[in-house]
Image 1 (tube, one colour):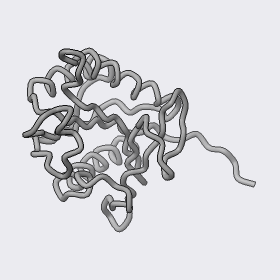
Image 2: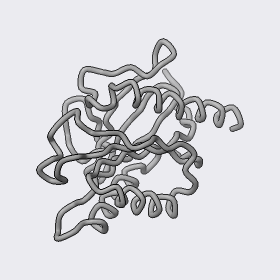
Image 3: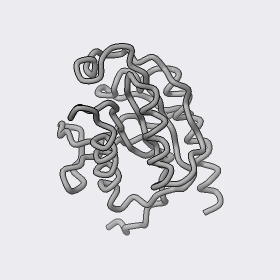
Length: 175
């Protein structure tokens, strides 16, 4: 019989997609007030891996990721997705979203996103939110899974997530 152990806190990350760069700044400021200082931020990338968001947000989409200095406990993380949904509503124009905000976390073993969409590989957390395993860490780097989103597979994103994990690893040594 295994003994349940308390999980170490994890590294909060957030991804954005929008065609309006000003929305990245607005969302970033709101998130900083709630979750504290940002310690890693990826430059804006062109988002061209899929056309899924074009109807909602338009063309010339940009992608950005950031991570927060403060580590978070694993319990009740569904609240983070519910909070980012409210930010999306707050930043909406004419009853339409102008930015997509996807929170998640990095641990030493994986990158998990929070989502409202149920799929076979997603685990229900609570309050209509699922955990979506996007990447796993093996052979000294994050690796994609069959269902990993195309942009999460790119070299730029993998490099960024590996750098966030390195910061997280140093933080866990001090816990």
